[in-house]
Length: 410
Image (cartoon, rainbow, N blue to C red; front, side):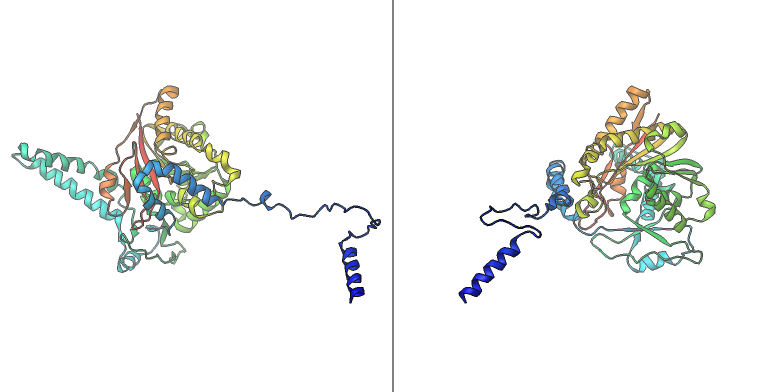
């Protein structure tokens, strides 16, 4: 047994030697080049991008939103709620009834009806006699509410269904009609608010500066008012997705009124400056919900730190291009899907300064506070925005985040 053990130890020693080497007796141990495992940290991040994003949000949004942040954070980490944007170009007359049977409601039409009622109330108030001091406040309120209705009534062709607060029912996938056009488009319903704020009028020339993947572009076409729509996105791959949306939802005769381009949006004023009645600038941002939930294409990846830090500058450049693309009297709506004031109000404030100082252009920020009143049954709004409006994710109404601000070039 001892001899066998000795031979076993000798064999083990031979096996430990590197192949093709003949270590001399008494020689010191050789160093092995591959003694340790390869370091995986060079190829895989130690901290997931989603965790980095949440840490950043906790630090910044905790201060910005205060006591609201814990509930907003919980909503960001839960399943997002969707709306069904009805496709007016599809033969789908049965769809509204089908959705209503599921307890979904067309919240855009409901808001338009509410605004019309306020307008009629204001007309009655003006016609009424004997408006004394006691009724002056009520009359002022009705007139103020009446002023809210025109932007929404002009876009009343838009129909979007959503389930009530607290109802987490999912919509079925979209179905094609006899001509292959899908009956509705599933999207974050809060994404409609910038389109409604733009208030497209008949025969308007409209620019969607950062159009892909195409949800807001499709919503603009649903108004039926675009005389011409320019849909641009710098990313060729994302522009392909835009083409796919257009071909899936829009007939050829309407697609012919849309020009799809892949210019750098920052240079748009050099292509067609000062020509559009309405401009939508839905800029790249930190896409907070995606960043908190998905590792793929996450801007909080360490390799994208510089890109993320430069976002406010890119957003400012795109907003300035949008302002320059609008004709005098034209409207620009700036929007993001971020909660960050650095990407929202701060960008707008800086654009106002740059427009005046560098281009001698006066820009007016329009009051959109009536959106909070009109859409309060569907969305949760942040009440402390310095400029524009912000939809906050909420567990009972898990849309957004969506920031939007309307500017008027004077």
